[in-house]
Length: 178
Image 1: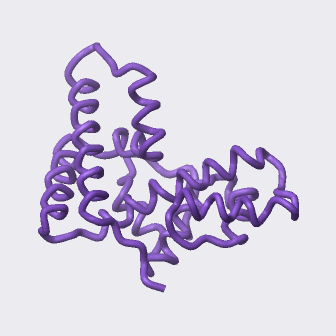
Image 2 (image 1 turned 180 degrees about the vertical axis):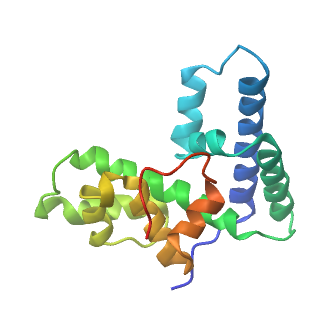
Image 3 (image 1 turned 90 degrees about the horizontal axis):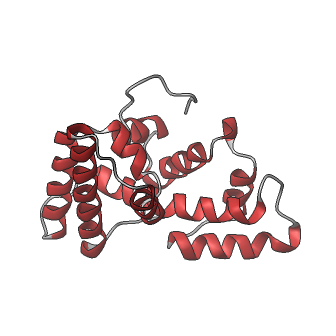
């Protein structure tokens, strides 16, 4: 299967996200005024995981990613992280929707296919019952691990390498990606 690939509009949306993160980073680093919870929630709803980027990426890298995504949208070179983070946001939205639907339990057999279909619709690419079951019982009780392992499969790249690139650690991780 061909890995999912963002189009020019998707890359522009990533550039805008990084521009917003740059503003939030400057606000966080330069003043006592912090972004409102509503502002952060709206950005995180649209791009789940982006607040982790805000916490782990410095201002130079955030600006670089904004410029690189904008250039790629205009036909410039694409970097692997662009497809990875685009797919990460989509998969995380699908993961969160599944988790909200099933809570802490296991999905019932009669609802499994409907959950798969909804996850596919949200993510925009093929997912299966294994995805829903992994979300129901995630490794190390972390849904982010489910998403990173699926990205590893989609992009034939180790999950740890993707995680390191997208979210460079500032402190030891609470989980392992083996």
